[in-house]
Amino acid sequence: MSPFPAYRPKRLSLGPLETEILDILWQLGTTSATAIHNQILADIDRDLTYSSVATVLRRLETKGWIAKRRVGRAYHWEPLLSADNAKVLESHERLHQFLAASNPDIVAAFADTLDQSSLDQLEAITQRIQAARHAQQDQQEQQP
Image 1 (cartoon, one colour):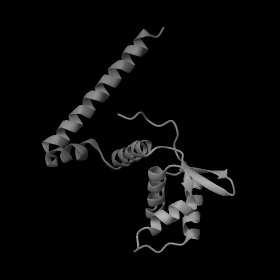
Image 2 (cartoon, helix red, strand yellow):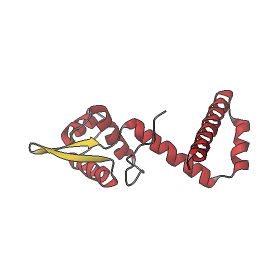
Image 3 (cartoon, one colour):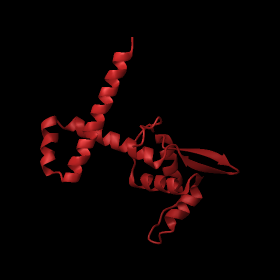
Image 4 (cartoon, helix red, strand yellow):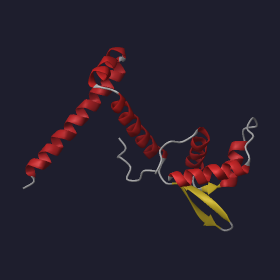
């Protein structure tokens, strides 16, 4: 299991083009807007201007997902967290949204619609939560 990331972007929500460009950055690593633009244009069905890519990169920077650094006369863009850490943050956010909109009876009612694999996953999650609570209680009891 990935640990909870120490860094969190200012805004988690991303639009489709922002997500696509961030995926390209994770794939290519630190790179220029030109390389990102060329990657998008490699799909012959795509028509996207360089300025649109530059605008999205600035938006991602403002949201706290990426940073730029000067390399020669150009800027290179780099993600501030890994794709795995982004998935952890996204999952955490979705869990909180789900719990905020639900109550225990509604959540329990979903159990009737889950397959065995999903039920096994929920059971494993429950066991991990209980183990973490026990460990936390043990730590509190050992403190003076």
